[in-house]
Amino acid sequence: VSHASGTVILAMDVSGSMAATDVAPSRLAAAKRAALSFIGAQPDSVDIGVVAFQQGGLEAALPTAEHTMAAAAVRRLSAGGGTSLGDAILASLSAITHKTVALGRNNSGPNIGYWPSATIVLFSDGQDQAGAASGPDTSLDAAAAVAQKAGVHIDTVGVGTTAGTTVEVDGYHLFTALDVATLRSISRATGGTYHPATDASELDGIASSIDLRLTVTHEPLPLAGAFIALALALLAAGAVLTVTRTGRVV
Image 1 (cartoon, rainbow, N blue to C red):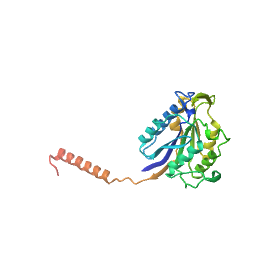
Image 2: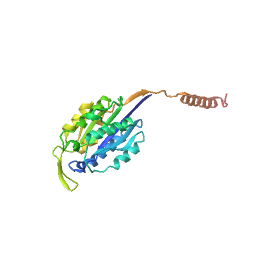
Image 3: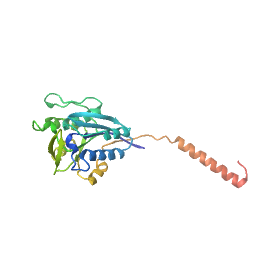
Image 4: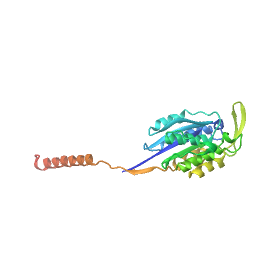
């Protein structure tokens, strides 16, 4: 019989901008709903983990076949803080490899091996606070390069609208809009796909639109028990037929 297995890390943006309401009821609430739908659609043979990221990756649940743990981790998430997309990718890679993955000097990336059956699904509005104050976040490109070298695809889910809205963060009113270009860049660099999620219909289709690269193996299925059961059933049927015809069991 065929047996599909793999690892999926749901990287959830819980920065302050995810409290925006341009996607009802809020970006984070919509992302959580889509993530829970995705978890529910996966077979038990797929290990699912959750990484919530603000300023640095915060590992919420290691990948496991117990999907109820991943679902519980998603439900606990709340918005607040900033975002570093590069750190989110590194934290997700750490969860996949079960060891700390960090950039070296000059953002040089480590060799973490090859993980072709692992996928990161990143739910975010693309607002990268790490690069907001000092220009482009070079660690984002470096982290994506580590994932690409390891064969880990990153599928990005853009939660928000390009029209944007204003959200209150730490007492300040800030304008925030979906950064499609950044999310497309991440997915393109790693061989993944960008998925828009700007309304309910797109959010509901996320679970079916993400194509996981699972490893399919063929495992032997013991049939001795089935044959024994069939033989006993045939013997019982034969006995009944004999009694019906002759009135005695031969």
